[in-house]
Amino acid sequence: MNRPTVARVDLAALASNYARLSERLAREAPHQTPGVIAVVKANAYGHGAHQVAHALEDAGADLLACADIEEGAALRTAGVRADILVFGALGVSDLDGLFDCRLTPTISSPGAARAVQAAAARYKQRVRYHLKIDTGMNRLGFRFDNLRRTLPELLASSHLELDAVYTHFATADDPDSGLFELQRVRFEQAAEQLHTLGGRPRYRHASNSAALLRDSRVWFDRVRPGLLLYGVVPPPLASTLELTPVMTLGSRVVAVKGLRPDEMSGYGARFTAERPTTIAIVPAGYADGLDLRMAGRGTVLIRGRRAPIVGSVSMDMLTADVTGLDVSPGDEVVIVGPQGNDRIDAREVATSIGSIPWEILCRVGSRIERVYT
Ligand SMILES: *Cc1c(COP(=O)(O)O)cnc(C)c1O
Image (cartoon, rainbow, N blue to C red):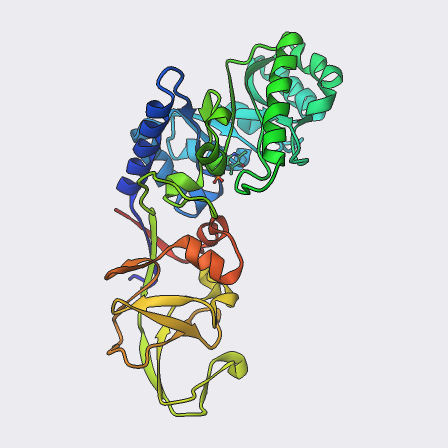
């Protein structure tokens, strides 16, 4: 038995996006081509972490990144063999997963360093880690302007081995922000200071999707794309990379109803027909991750045409105005993706409701079956 609302995940598109990006890096930096850290956190942006991780491994990825130890452990359980970097702050209590699942932690505070050092000593293992420098995001990381005081103890930790140093940009997708440039300079200075203090990381990395599109000076030795791998360019940026959106979200019309003038539809009676109106009922609602704000703002594709979402998005369904289209139950509905000559992409959905494409993808609900092609 299958629900009609399905997210199709095109793993060939994912592999192609990975290849296009790798080719671009090699072409533009032939002498020092950065490697890729493929970001698969948050269930691979809603696409399914296991399938995406395996497909990326097959495409050549040797380092994946996830948000926390639990995500990394789930990848190992699924048989992923590539190195796995954990971006997030480490819980103080449950570091066992690092050792049991061979994960690479980010160390972003002196306290975390002590906790991992103590755990590694207990396990009689040396842990390779990535050092995170806070260059202005002011979230996780060692402050860039305090390294002389904070790094010596970390670098002297007997069971910790510095593998890489990195930072994260707060405004890479904002061409008007000067902070991006400031963070780049601070990171370069921090890397020098690390060297002065005796730290010898094998490599440096800093670029999320927006940063890598924007400025090759921040490619360093590896780049960390997430959104781009899924075929979406971070707004408002543009790219000549040939990317294909990996996820298509579709459904089918389950019922069609005629409204007479002045009749309403849905909770709150937010939509009133001004003329004889035909409404298609689509079994996808906020329990599937759709956003309430799509009502009155978004559209879906039915029979190759745009049908405005009207009334209210409810838990299990939405309604679209299909007046004038010859719509019947069973007709295919596209919520995100192409149909006919038209396409609704995650950027457009995000813009229509004041959100961002990352959120649109990540929120596709667990009730929705992922079908892999
Ligand atoms: C999520 C994340 C990325 C990837 O970001 P995109 O904008 O999706 O490319 C890179 N680095 C870190 C530290 C992240 O948390």
